[in-house]
Image (cartoon, rainbow, N blue to C red; front, top):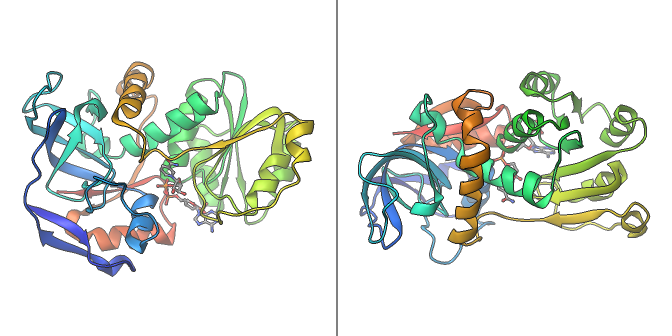
Length: 325
Ligand SMILES: NC(=O)c1ccc[n+]([C@@H]2O[C@H](COP(=O)([O-])OP(=O)(O)OC[C@H]3O[C@@H](n4cnc5c(N)ncnc54)[C@H](OP(=O)(O)O)[C@@H]3O)[C@@H](O)[C@H]2O)c1
C-alpha cells in the first residue's frame, strides 16, 4: 500500500510517499480501507520530531481516518467487512489501509460524506473529554476557547453552543472571528488587536468565564487565570506558546480555580472506547441531524500531504484539513 512516511524530522518536505506492507488487525482490531485521513496539529509536531508516537503505535502519521472495514481481527463482533466507519487511532492514518481498535470506531454519521467523517474523531474525542468530562461545562455556563477557528475550536464552539453554553473565542483575524460567530460563538475576540482578559471581563460584567480550553500555555497561563470566574476551570490541551510559565498561586486560592489538562493519544483503548460511547449517545444525533458538523476547509490527495502541512502551518485555514485517497 502507499503510505506517507516522515523521512526525518523536519519541514513539510520530509513527508514522503512510500510503499509499505499492509497492516494486519490483531485481536480486537479492524482493518480499514481508508477513504480519507484528517490532518491535525499534533501530526505537524510529530513531523518536526517533538511529539514521538507512543510505544506500539505506527510511525506513519495520522490520528484519524474514515473508510470501509476490510476485515476484522479475532473477537470483534460489532463491525464487519463493508461497514463505513470513522476511527480514532494512535498513528498510521496517512495510508491506504490502517488498523484501529474496534472500540475506537464509530459509524459514519447517517447522511454524511465519508471524507467529512474523517475530520470528526480527533477533535470530537478531544473536545468531549476535555470540555464536558474534565471541564464539566454545564448549560448556561460561559466558556472561552482559544484558537476558535482551529479544528479543535470549530468543534468546541458548535458542541458547547448546542448544549446551551455561552461561548466566547479568540482568533487571529476578523475573518476568522466572523466565521466563529457563524458557528455559534456569542463573541469572537481578535487577540491581535484586543486584550482577551479585558474583553472577557467586559462581556461577563466583570465576573469572568467558567471554563477556558487553552492550546497556547506559556504566558497565556496567568492571563487565563485572570479571565476565570469563581470556581472556574482551565483545561490545558496544547502548548503552542510554550510549556513553562510562572504564576502567582494566590490566583487559584482566592477564586477556587482548577487547573488541569490532558492528552488523548496515550490513553488506553478502554478510556477511548468510553469516550466513543458517550459521543455515539450524545453527539451522533447532532451530527445526523446536521446541528453540528465537521468544518472541512480543504482536501488534498494523500500524496500531497506536504502541501496540507504547509497550509496548516500557515494557519490560514478555518476548521479541518483532510487527505483523500
Ligand atoms: N491534548 C490533546 O489531546 C489534543 C488533541 C488534539 C489537538 N490538541 C492541540 O490543540 C491545538 C489545536 O489543534 P488543531 O489540530 O485544531 O490545530 P489547528 O487547526 O492548526 O489550529 C491551531 C490554531 O492555533 C492558532 N495559532 C497558531 N499559532 C498561534 C500563535 N502563535 N498564537 C496564537 N494562536 C496561534 C491558529 O489560529 P489563529 O489565526 O487564530 O492564530 C490556528 O487556527 C494544538 O495545540 C494541538 O496540539 C491537543
